[in-house]
Every structure is written in C-alpha cells, then in structure tokens.
Length: 270
Ligand SMILES: C[S@@+](CC[C@H](N)C(=O)[O-])C[C@H]1O[C@@H](n2cnc3c(N)ncnc32)[C@H](O)[C@@H]1O
Image (tube, rainbow, N blue to C red; front, side, top):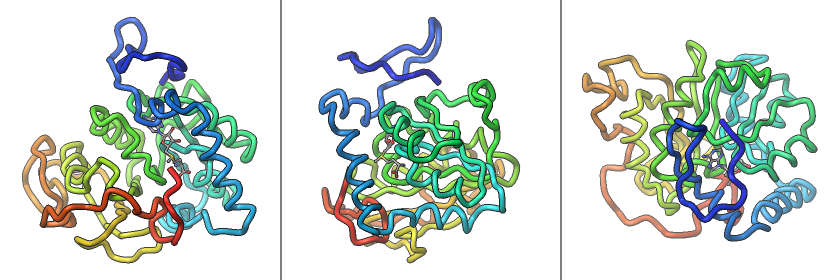
C-alpha cells in the first residue's frame, strides 16, 4: 500500500518502479474533482452522531459475528465509524482507507486504533506487519458503500486481497446499495471468482432477508473450499458463477435513493 497520489489527472498510476498499475478508486477521483467532498462527508456523520442518530448498525452486526477480542480489518474505514466503536468494544481494529482526510479524522475520533492510508487494491500482509498491525484478521468488514467506490477494474483484486488477510476461520461482511454502478449480480460473480463462499445475505445490517427487491445488500462471506464455489457447485473459483442468493431477474434497479446504511431511514450521504 502506498499513499494515494493527491493531485493527478492520470487515470492510472504505477505502484513502485515495477509494481502493478492500479486504477484510482472512484472516491479518489471524486475528491480530486470536489476537494471538499471528504470534509462534507465527515461532517454529516459527525452531525448525525451529535444528533443521536444511529450510525453504528454495521459495528453491531460485526460485533455479533466476531469472537471477543477479535482482530477486525475495516476495509475502506473512512473516518472510523465502523471500526472505532468496534475497538471500544475490545476488538483489535485496523482500518485502511485511501482518503487521508478521513484517516486523520479517524485518528482524531478514535485514537489508539491503527488507521492507515492505503489502497485496498494494494493491500499486503507484509505492509500491515510493517505498520505494526496484525497480518491476519478474524473479520473483515467493508461497509458504507466501499465496494461501489472501488475502481471497477480493481474489484476482484480487492476481494482477493481481503480473503488473503483472513485468519483461518475468518469471515467478511460486505454491504452496499443498489443503483451505484456495481450490480449485485456482478458482485456475486466476482465473489465466486475470487474464491469466496456466500454464507448469508441480508437487505440491511438489521438482518432483514435479502430478496430480488432489495435495494441494499449485506453479504457474509467466507473463503470457499476449492471445488465447492458458493457452497453449491463443484465449479472452480475461476469460473464466474451466479450465487444462489443473487437475484434471478435483471429487473432495473433504481438509480438513486437506496439507503447507504442499509436498514436505516437515512437519505443517501455519499
Ligand atoms: C462512502 S465511504 C464509507 C466509509 C466508511 N466505511 C463508513 O461506512 O463510514 C467509502 C470509503 O471507501 C474508501 N475507498 C474507496 N475505494 C478505496 C480503495 N481502493 N482503497 C481504500 N479505500 C477506498 C473511500 O476512501 C471512502 O472512505
């Protein structure tokens, strides 16, 4: 992982001298176009918290999945809204986000937690170790629409790298809304192609069941057993496979208005 280029019109950047070329995350491109976006995003969550609104549904969900004192990887942690409360519950949290403004806010709001600037498409256990963080985790969480903000070309890379930082028995929870450029069907194909098994799906962090009409998806993933992709097929990991939980129709999805926090009544924030 390296700190993101701050100002660049280039769409792609090279990591190191001979490293892979990684497309910039859509979030990075957004803040290049609108430098105040991060601060507005941050302020809205701080205002909601100050007003007593519930912004901790994801943290409660992850806490229920996790053993006590778990190692939790907060992927695209932003300002620490998910990982911060989990750390206060006694978990060992490491958060990685490409946005240095949000990482600074996480450090301010939740000191004592490991918050790192980095691109998930470049995530490596060795880099985590160099930062004094665990290299393997019991739970990885990517909440709050991280997935649709990845550069589309890096989605499978990120899913693979998240799997690679899990300890044996580890699982992941991934949640994002419909109508954000990453159709759920494609997500399930990417999940199967990167060696994950979908253990459960919900339409919110409040555990309501996922169905064809759902405008939000929360997927609980575990590393799959080779030859048993999705837990329901003998096809290999490289063969994209529609997950049995995925919608079976191609009904058009709404282009806006899905609840970014999946299960609350909040309007879209990001
Ligand atoms: C909508 S915010 C959600 C932040 C946080 N998870 C939350 O729920 O409050 C999406 C986050 O994904 C991060 N992100 C997007 N692409 C990323 C990437 N490739 N690597 C690391 N972080 C990324 C953004 O920087 C941003 O903080």
